[in-house]
Image 1 (cartoon, rainbow, N blue to C red):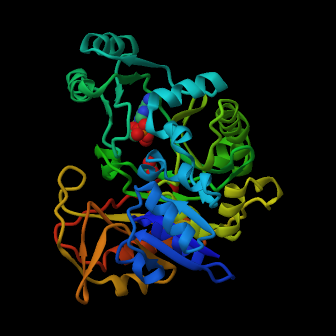
Image 2 (image 1 turned 120 degrees about the horizontal axis):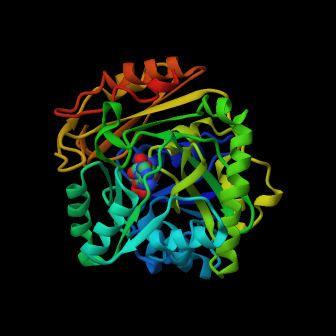
Length: 421
Ligand code: AMP
Ligand code: GLY
């Protein structure tokens, strides 16, 4: 197949590596990509946010499948434009992508579908915010409504900080004040063809910048999969997945379909396992980053077949995704100053030495080639991914590898998957 992958992060690199690991060889194109992706796919010069440009390219180049990685092209309507031209695309249209793009939309869909989530109030003024904060009590949760690259949410004991966060976003529209939910978090991905869903294997993401879940929220500092402790709570991973499929994924997919906005692509359920059951914290309309980097290396079913079946509406006839029993751990190498003000442009060293560790590979997030050297171009630079038969070995391999990489001022968490080992 000829497959075009849109995006430039480690998630897209992970998707491309999974496509390349299939027994069948594919022609893989990427836009805009990064220096790591350039080694595994042909980079094409294309504005991924321009629906007409992407559609024109896919048409002329006879692309068999377009895979949309990040949320921005979804919200820009790239999926709609491709579908209108009859080009198979994995990624929802603009309307269904509102599930991620608007927290108010997501709450409405969940309410209509009877999906368990935290109570929330839409507050349009500072007074409304203050009243809602007092209604729910501490810890306080305030969320910007639109896409905010992981920065729109604050969870704090400090009422003044919650009010200040709300004040920063109120000029652009109402904010969401939410009930605080307590419990372990799980990310569960569903492939959807608008009607049928197929779950992937659960993962956990580490969102805070510092060890011990301290510091600011980030795009994600590491992840692992599978989650052995799910079996203690639910009897088995399969039982957990079945419950979330029946109570959360299918009702949401049916609701979107009933509203005339079917969801074709990746439904990302961000879940919290509270004492009163599994609840949704958020939905995303795309693969999670960095969870994808630990879920896809464990996938044993050809990814291209699953994505194409979702795009064509034939998931029901396609075998369910199968996963290896290995554990995958990823640790993100971040630039100095990430997430607030990352310092970029610094050279990277030791990548080959890192990739030489048994079971380890690298997924590039923000790298550019400068001559023979690689430089960091963003906040999250690289994902070190390690696979092993058990989580302790996978962690040891990941940290052995990351310790071989040089990037001045960089930081990473030392406790990814520590609780599972
Ligand atoms: P979101 O962008 O909605 O995924 O929120 C980012 C992170 O904030 C989540 O992964 C949680 O760790 C935390 N968070 C969001 N909403 C809540 C909530 N209602 N209760 C507790 N933590 C939350
Ligand atoms: N890992 C969080 C996200 O992809 O939104």
